Image (cartoon, rainbow, N blue to C red; front, side, top):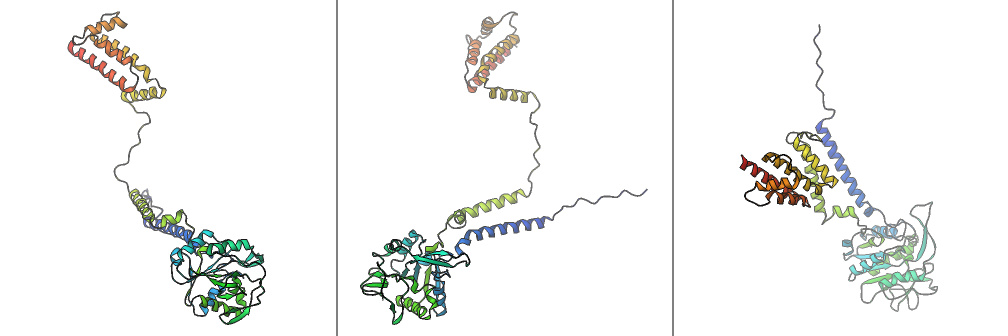
Length: 399
């Protein structure tokens, strides 16, 4: 007979180290996805073809930013409040759908810093066949432009069509934009006729207002003379590096719960919760002490029977009626233990039991009456203990 073959010991389907590194990689990937999805909106191009420094549409200013870089002037983008606090020349390009509160915030932060505000001019629609392109279909109403201008300075857009055909920008003469937009000013930096200005400066603040964006936007840079004039215009305001504002178009202003969790001051709370979760996970990897045995739903023994009966009576709301019944039961039991004559019941048995007590008059009767009048568990418990003690003491005296 051949020897019985021994089956190999069962093996674990996965190596513990492999499982650990798999879980660690999953958690790391989840954390990376959470952070990227939280901060992704801050790195997207705001405006999507509008009048923003990143827009390549005709009303955008991406061409000016690139043109400044190519001609040796460093160019930066202001995405946060800290960026707005620098002393570089800030160019704020306003679009019709910009946030008015954000503009007020910029005015407060830049009250003593050189800032060029470019007013909006055109109503546009997106071109479906070219993503990021815009199609203009008319001038913005003067009331809309005046709302933005009124937040910066006291003044209004000039009414009526300008008759100026050419503009002089730092000695360079160029053709005036179509439907030139101007403001009234007796001391213009760039004149648009008598008492009119295309570029003006506030008297009490280092704020400059360019009334017509067609002097520096992408559409104007297709003409070489206007492109050169755009550089002269920026240089006339201030030489040196230039910063374009993106906060007015939504960058750096989208706060949500996810950012609160990963930025101070709530970052400490998040790290504490993660550390506690890691400790709980490590604690759960190993068992401490023997496993707890499952207990019966209904235990054996007299005590379990009593506890179950008490629970049922409590749930049925019948505990208040047990005082008198318990007193009657103790009367019969005390009579049997103390040798009461046969045939005694009720009050007659109470009087006989009271006669057994030499220390107290009506000792048993008073205790039985207190048990019958008990209204809550505490009173009932005290009365039952007194009845039990009385019976035990009389029984001890008899023995």
